[in-house]
Length: 282
Image 1 (cartoon, one colour):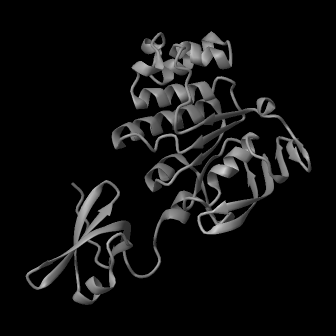
Image 2: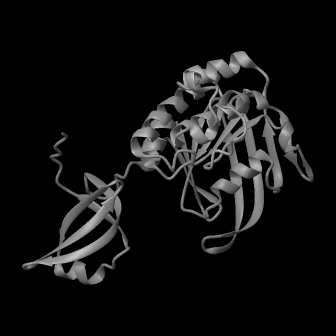
């Protein structure tokens, strides 16, 4: 069991705020931290890792990592941390990047096999693609068989196909090693695919906590489905107005009334919903 009760003064997206979090996380859970930028998600990960100070307590399996003014050093915390920028040693081969953390060749071979990197183990990071580098980064984080794996949007810079592939590999590794995984993500599909629990932060406070379906599925009102996107343009075609909206990786056109067109501004985040429900999947 992970018991977190921490406080830290921060300057968030909307000004000064207090990061105040009280959580209990079960061993083996895959938890996604969600919320707007500046809500305290990455800071919470860094506090867990011991990279930032905070007041309060962090208790992991009956051992305090943080208690009052006493903080366990980073190197003594049984964590693996995967950043967005890979942070690999460019002068070391893939295999040596892993063995630098823990000189366990059998474990390194196993991880490289699981992530389809074994044939590349003698290559250097500068010869790898972004997806391959991120796989090395994840493998390296698992070399100490950490009790907690912390992921700070590790797949955000990758294309959709590579993200899906690495999400599947990440889930396999999570199950294989039985780690407790805490991941920052803004991607609803990624959260739904990987996590069994979503914690939403807003201005440093937990505002929602539950299963991905409960937290992410939008069922309010009478609409049957809805999507959020950015309004890119509004064009008048004959007597109607057409809004161009970016939803995920897609652009969609939606007919809007003249009154709606007057009230909307380019760059608005809008919600597209419908009451009719006759979807066609192709």
